Amino acid sequence: MQLLTKAPNARLGSSEIPGEEREIKDHLFYRNINWQKLQNLEVQPPFKPRVVSKFLMSSVLYLVIYLKRLFCFVVFVVVFVAVCAIMMVFIIVVISFIIVISLITIVQTFRSK
Image 1: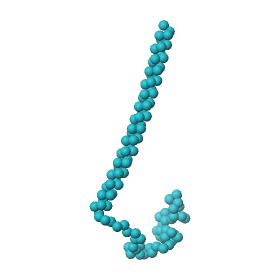
Image 2 (image 1 turned 90 degrees about the vertical axis):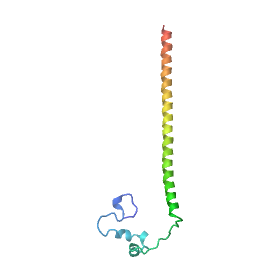
Image 3 (image 1 turned 135 degrees about the vertical axis):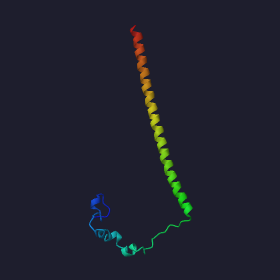
């Protein structure tokens, strides 16, 4: 079994049998991890981000959320305008077609008289 496979049933540790997590712990990728220390929270993270202030972090988070919503709104407006433009072109073509057919009918009626 492999760790990353498309089929969920074929992944390491996918079995519901107790003790199957051993497959993951014994995998070559995780060979340098001391699982007992990890479970006891004795392992120091390899990188700790330096937080200047909680206010700044929350402001950045709100800014990211706001920009995401703004981007979604802009995409919606662009798509809406594009659809409206396509509909206007279609309406103009249909009206032009109706006018041309009407003119042809009028011309034919006058010619037949």
